[in-house]
Amino acid sequence: MCLAVPARIVALDGDSATADLHGNRVQVSTLLVPDARLDSWVLVHAGFAIETLDEDEAQATFAVLRDLGVDPSGAPGAPGAPGALDAFDAEVDRG
Image (cartoon, rainbow, N blue to C red; front, side):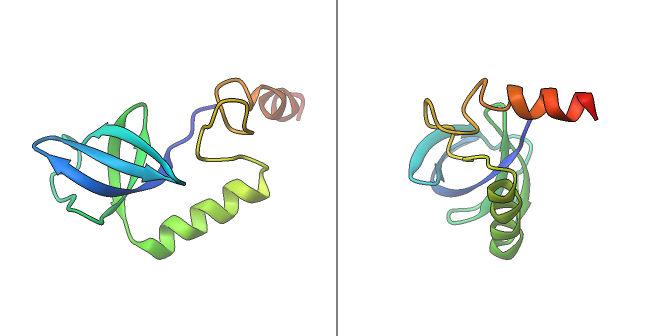
């Protein structure tokens, strides 16, 4: 299962940006969202900002992720970090 998570752009440099993801700073490409601006909320997937969204949509997404027990920051060892969703995926696959 792959997730796109909201992040707020805190710095822009051409087609790349630094985004704040729950206190973690990540580098993302903004090639797919040319309308992204400083302080824009974007959905980030695999290092790319793939869509802009407003803060209400971002907060609603965070609420859903919390309900699923996922930490969208991706901090090592945190729920939601790589491999952390394996148990969730297995449960979903069992249906």
